[in-house]
Image (cartoon, rainbow, N blue to C red; front, side, top):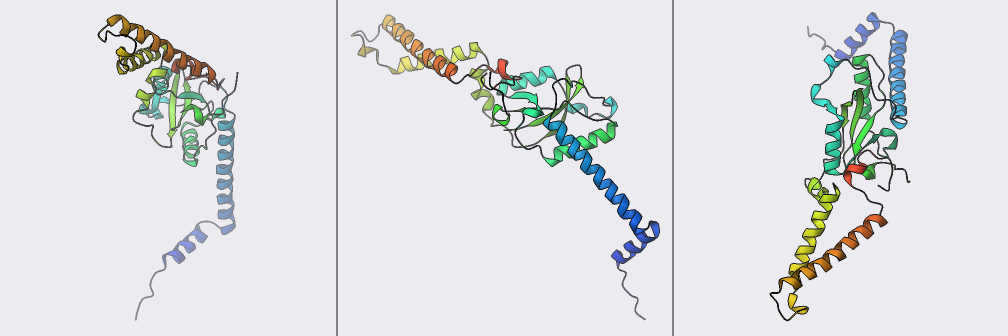
Length: 241
C-alpha cells in the first residue's frame, strides 16, 4: 500500500484553522496592516514637515549603534569639505525610500518612542531652497549629536572634495586665483610687451594685470550667481548663498 504524499500547504492550513478561527486571523492581519500603514503615513508626514525646533529624541543609548552617532562638528566639517548641506527633511525634494521609512519604524519600535526633527545631508540641488548626490538621513538625539538612520543613493564623485576646495573659504579662492594668474602669465610671451624678454619687472607687471582680470571675472560671476563659501552655506536654507 502506497502512502499518500504529504501536502505541506494543506497541513499548514489545517494547523492555522485549529490554532485560530479564520475570521479572527483575518481581523488580526487587517489590524496589523492598518497599524503599519498608519505608522508609515505618520512618518512620511513627519519627514515632510520636520521642524528645526525638534533637536532631541528619547532614544535608549544602550540600544544604539555607536558607529552611527555623529556630532554636529563632524557633520559640519564634512559638509564644508564637500560643499554639502545639512537641512531639515521638509526642504528635501528627493524621494525618501521605503527602506528608510521602515528603519525609522523599527527604531521607534525598539526604543518605544516617536522620532521627529529629521535632517538630511545632501548637495544643494537635492533641496527646495528659499530665495532671500547622496542623502544621509539623521535624527537628533540631543546635545548636538545626531543618529544616522539611513543612507541611500550613489556615492559622491571621488574628486568632489578637491573640486570644491576653492569654494571652502576666501583664502582658498585667492590661492586659486593667484595660481591661475601665475600660470597664465607664464604662458604669455613677455617679448610681446617688451624688447627685453628676461625683464622681471615686465613679468610681474603682466602678472598683476592678469591677476586683476581673473579676480574680476571670478568676483563678477560669484556675485551674479549668488555664490558663497562652504562655511556659510552648509546649514543655510537659502538658495543664493
